[in-house]
Every structure is written in structure tokens, then in C-alpha cells.
Image 1 (tube, helix red, strand yellow):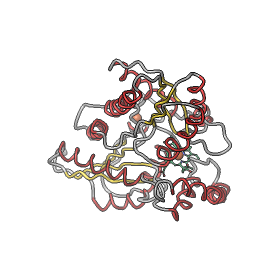
Image 2: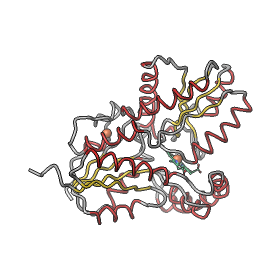
Image 3: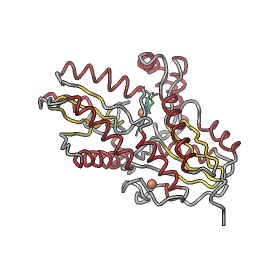
Image 4: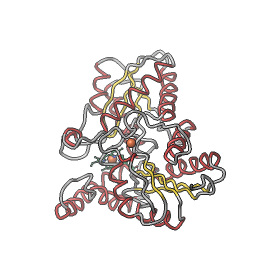
Length: 352
Ligand SMILES: C=CC1=C(C)c2cc3[nH]c(cc4nc(cc5[nH]c(cc1n2)c(C)c5CCC(=O)O)C(CCC(=O)O)=C4C)c(C)c3C=C
Ligand SMILES: [Fe+2]
Ligand SMILES: [Fe+2]
């Protein structure tokens, strides 16, 4: 039997990535639009189209990143999460050597470079852990597919595909919302759960489980708040629409208009992101903040992303330990557990 200590364990965190500065906005956008998971056309058409779209969007995207100092805070925020998770796992697996790596899909550290770093570490076991709570073909599947295509090192590999109802994730969200509800005081507010949108046809045509899993996160957070004696008026909406296709709705601006008609303020909650970046700091705080002001939606409050909240990092550690077979705690929630038809979390160990 393989000994359960003295092992080299690599945990790989996946996220989308963001430009470091103004000069890297365009190549980041090109990588994004050149991904067949984002634009499902053959490469001969997709690549020139990606070049065109990234050129056309460059100036407006640069202006958004300029509002955050020039580039995206996504990598520094993810590094904090990696450091915190490594410390938590180090304490829980004192006899093993655990290292947490970051693999971004569209900007540095790119997945190919991280795969080489992990291979050089020479792990006995690898846990692939997307920082997307809900599984989508556009995010999780795209990241994992690329990893599996490029990783050529040692190690038995396990995947945590999704964790829409993980306990600590739900706890951290509920705590952030409760703090904002306290700030609103007696003023009537609606909790607006704002998720990154995806094209509707991915859900209806391709069976993308993202919408179902986002809805399950919302239900779990609302139930957790109810357990704490807070019955909240709430709605789910979708932000960040790009391109000509019909996306999931209602949009966050539409939900704000509805809140205005109903005479409510808003507590906006980023329900599909775990860290701050352009879609929270610019889109939610500035763009929709201004819209809320014009519509008379007051107060307009925004719950922060979970970041390194202790409950959240604890749940990620539980997911890693469970994937390694070191604990019975499976924090994924019913959206996962291998019940979804294409869920890769139950894949057989891949011998290195
Ligand atoms: C064009 C289609 C897009 C789909 C589908 C999409 C899905 C999706 N994205 C995230 C999380 C993030 N998106 C980020 C940036 C970003 N996303 C798109 C487009 C799609 N995303 C674009 C064009 C951009 C660039 C910024 C912009 O121009 O708006 C980021 C990074 C933000 C940063 O600070 O750099 C994240 C994170 C999810 C969760 C998701 C579907 C589930
Ligand atoms: Fe996106
Ligand atoms: Fe799963």
C-alpha cells in the first residue's frame, strides 16, 4: 500500500487570468476570444475573428483596467488565496509537502508554464481545483481541458470539478451579505445575486450546468441567511454580457430597474466570483453604482468577494483533502458528486 505521508502534493488553482498592465490587455483579450469554449467556430475563422474583436475592444477594456491602476488585481488576489490555502493544508498535512500553484487560462501565469513548474516539483499526487464555484463549459471545462492536454509530469491526478454549495463558501457569502444588510439597517433592500452571464444556447443546447449550479448556490445562501433569522427579498441576475447572442437573464441592469420600480435599495452579491477584479470593482461598483444612482436605487451596497475568508479557504482545504482520500468531508453539494452527466470530478486517477 502507498504510505499516506511524506508525499509531494501539488494543488493547482485555476482561474481566468487578467492583464498585468495596459499593454497586455489586447493579447489577454485575444487569448480569451481565441478559445473554442468562448467562440465555438473552427480555428480558421475563430483566430482572425479573435484578432478583430481584441483590437476593437482594446481601448474600452484598457479604460476599465485603468480604473484599477492599469491592470487586473485577479493574480495578486489569487496569490493571497494560494498562500492561505497552502498554509491551511500545511497545517492539516504536516507530514507531507504541499505546494499550491496557480494556472490562468488567458494570461500569466499561463497553464502551460504552470504545468512545467508542477512537473519540475515532481508530485506524487495532484489536485486540480478550479476557483469557479459553478461548473461551466466556458470556464472550468476550458481550463481543465487545456491542463490535461499540456501536463506531462508525474503524479496521480484528481479533479474537484465544482463546489456550488460548499459549506464554507456558502457561510462566507452569507456573512458578507449579513454585514451589508446590517449597514442598510431599516431601509428596504433586495439582495441581488449577480452572476457572470453566459450565452443562453450553451445551457439549452449544450447542457451547460452553470445556470442550475448558480441557482443552487443562491438557494443555499438564502437558506443559510434564513437559518440566521434573515428572510431576504432576493433575485438572481446576470452581468457582463458580451457579443450579439442572447445571454442568460435577467441582466443585472434589468434587476436594478425592477428594484427601482419596487422602491427597494440593493445589496449586490458577486455569486460566481471568489475574488475582486474588473467585473466587481468596475462593473458592479462603478457602472452599476452609477446606474443605481440614476434610477434612485438607494442604498446601493455591494458585498465583497470572499477572497481569503477563513470559512472559504477552509472549504477549499476540505475539497483537497477529500479528493486525496484523507477525509470524508465532501463539500461539493448536490450540484456535483458526479451526478451531473459530464462532471469530471469522478474521473479515475490518472497515473503519472
Ligand atoms: C465572451 C464571452 C465570455 C464568457 C462566456 C465569459 C464567461 C465567464 N467569465 C467569467 C469570469 C471572468 N471573466 C473575466 C473577464 C472577461 N470575460 C469576458 C468574456 C466572457 N466571459 C471578457 C471579454 C473579459 C475581459 C474583461 C472585459 O472586457 O469585460 C474575468 C477577469 C477579469 C479581470 O480582472 O481581468 C473573470 C474572472 C466567468 C465566471 C464566466 C462564466 C461562468
Ligand atoms: Fe468573463
Ligand atoms: Fe463534480
